[in-house]
Image (cartoon, rainbow, N blue to C red; front, side):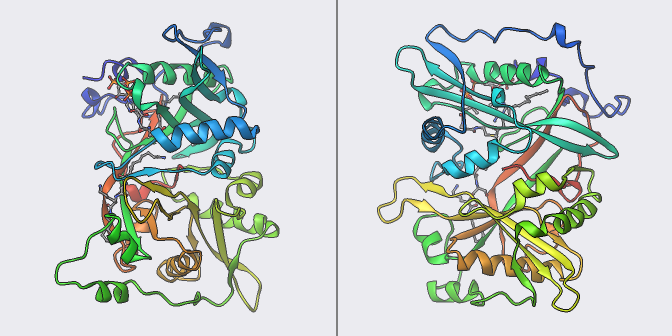
Length: 388
Ligand code: NHW
Ligand code: EN5
């Protein structure tokens, strides 16, 4: 059934019941001298390129490929529209490898037709901290689909990750592959219900009118928690401490240091927003919340071309109840004119989504590890990792 994935060091469906298989790496690292030195073969019309994501021009080419060919919902009404600034942020974290930003182009026209990326990350599984690659932005141009190009892309990124002496990876997908470590549900909180209904993102509920719906989702104009403010660079050490302590509760979670927090969580306009609660008396940082900006193109609507979506990122509550903290995140997102606030049911999110008037979406997100077996599957609430 999975001609490619059956050949890879990933948990296989046939092994799901087998309690004899140990947790941990599926295959041992090979000596670096035995890692293939040349790129995998592509069909003759195409060639590999390493994308320089510092270059505005390259970034614009990648942006265009993804904006036209990346992930859509199951009814092809919306397509992710990652911005250039977002791509630069996502692909250039501390210690990133340019060689992991891989494109395929047509030899004659130089047109970019496929893409895959990795970025380095330290990820803890139970009590082991493992250097991994986070794989994302796998994309093959619509006209080149179903030609088995994706397995070549995956093998080539794997080879380049191995060359850095890294042997594990984490990735997510909307499709089921062998085999998820957990499956999360997408939830959606309407901020601009009229637009969401107009573009077919959501529907008017039974026995609901438009004005009752607008009232149902109305939020206060300003946040309610005293001391709630935007995160600043000077807050990095305090936020790192909060986050480290919080993430230690999950079975799978990133190990963030100050440099990672500086990169991933200090606010960047139109990319990532982060807020914290500073106790007005003690000036202690007690709570943190964040979301990233990922609009979707609306395919074929007369009136609107983009849906402005905020995605819940990392949240830590120690003093402010999570419900109130996330409600302030919703208010902040509304102030910034987002149409919808999306979240997965991972970490502690499952405990507050219903009360905050999120509803389940029609999409799921499956989480995977490459060359690392976890058994049995985790509950979403045991997962402390958010991929972009
Ligand atoms: S998930 C988003 C993936 N991108 C999209 O959905 C964009 C729209 N779709 C496309 O561009 C986030 C194409 O449909 C793609 C497949 C390119 C998806 N992951 O070339 P063929 C990520 O980026 C398998 C993995 O003919 P295609 C995470 C499929 O099961 N495998 O198909 C990426 C089949 O294998 P099988 C996927 O439609 C993680 C084979 O590809 C997949 O023209 C990558 C068919 O290939 C997916 N999302 O192109 C893995 N979708 O065995 C990283 C399909 O079943 C692993 N397939 O026959 C770790 C690597 C690093 C290790 C380091 C130690
Ligand atoms: C990983 N980096 O399907 C990316 N989104 O629910 C790769 N549905 O937006 C993996 N179909 O339910 C991506 N509205 C996997 C996700 C791909 C995109 C996707 C889903 C997630 C989504 C929307 C729109 C559906 C349009 C028709 C949806 C209902 C919202 C409603 C609001 C009011 C309360 C009830 C729910």
